Length: 179
Image (cartoon, rainbow, N blue to C red; front, top):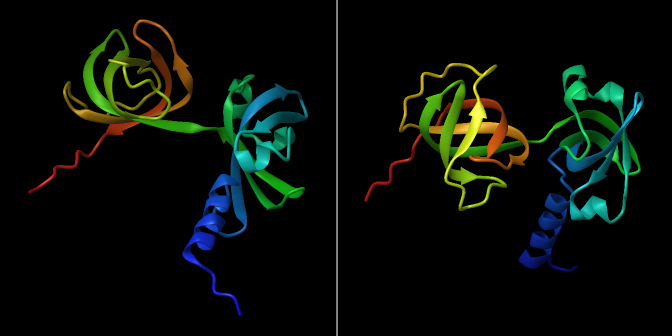
């Protein structure tokens, strides 16, 4: 009987992560929207495990909630949740992919919040500040100088300063290191 080494286990775990698989029978993959019709949203998987095998996947529009479908556009990043295995998978849902940024609130002015990023996904490290519209967001009682965590969709929109399509925000818990 062969003994499974740590390297083999690591390779298997890496393969699961590359495929976008999660535990149990519900799995997901991230993808980019190629086209939208009344019946389907056509997406191209972004992950290596799917992108090389499946060039395009048709997601039935009845699996996308109406609010997301109304705002979905070409090249948007989405997360597709499914059960089963390829090619006999059943799409459960499709939604805009969410990203997070953490940063210090610099100011609130004219309905916009200005934040200096400290931890972020997909934002250049040399970005000094990001702005986002506060309309539709909860008043979280944040004060200038506090750390906030922002959930956003889509890529950064270039400008002075760059801006984000923010869906939620909260005051971040700051970890204090002790010696």
